[in-house]
Length: 310
Image (cartoon, rainbow, N blue to C red; front, side, top):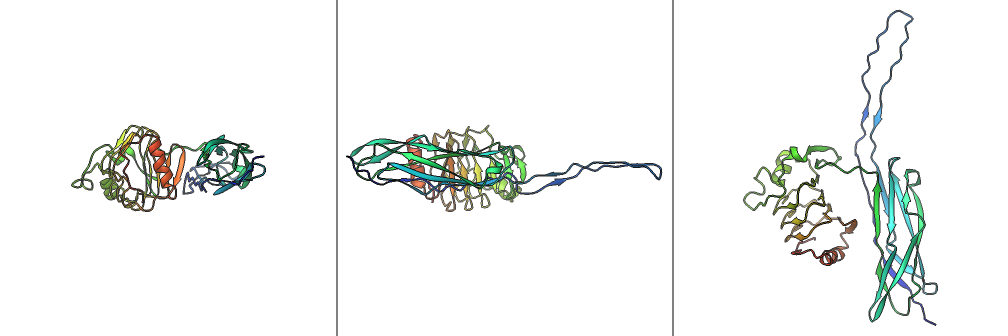
């Protein structure tokens, strides 16, 4: 009889927060009601609107242990938050994972999860999942289980510049940024089309930049030293990010990269010490997963990727 051993699968504690709006706007139309005579009665109506933010948090285990006797492992998924009635949060695990041990052939473990979608009235509830690895044998096996976490029904932000409250300050066209242009030390902060000039002089309250799908690359030093920039969304049309593109953006926290990147220049995140997550190809890489992110880039054949993510 094969002796089963405990198996540890590392998964990441993901906390995903999505804010669709950060202010409450109540709108009442102006209605003029006119009447005549002392006994006249009239009715009127006003439209009242409130735009409330949607948000959610997904928690999955940091570590999942497979029992050495049953070759089964159980985990829990928790989803909390407050989302709009037409939205759903999806938490979908991989259907199977590969377990490895030095000196032995890889084996496959299968994943099943009781629930993968949550509606607004299911926020705050848990579900369980199971990992089955009947082919386990003696020794320490390791693997990684990934989850695809999405919000169905969320509206994508229009290209442009946004402040900390999610209010659009300017459309991409109004901002006038030429993100594809190559800048240098002599003009990255003086050229009126550079990200630095626009975000520093025209729209200094900008904390988030959403780029349009019309651009295919981000030029050298295009957003260098944008001090207030906290979040960047780069469309899938972009295949190249040139060097120092976001160098010294000291407050940059969240970055969504193009899924179609082919080349990443030197030190694109140099002196950017506060990055908490980079989203690429549906996976959120936290600041503790830099090595995994680097390896993913290598596996994808990304060239010239000598950037710095501190």
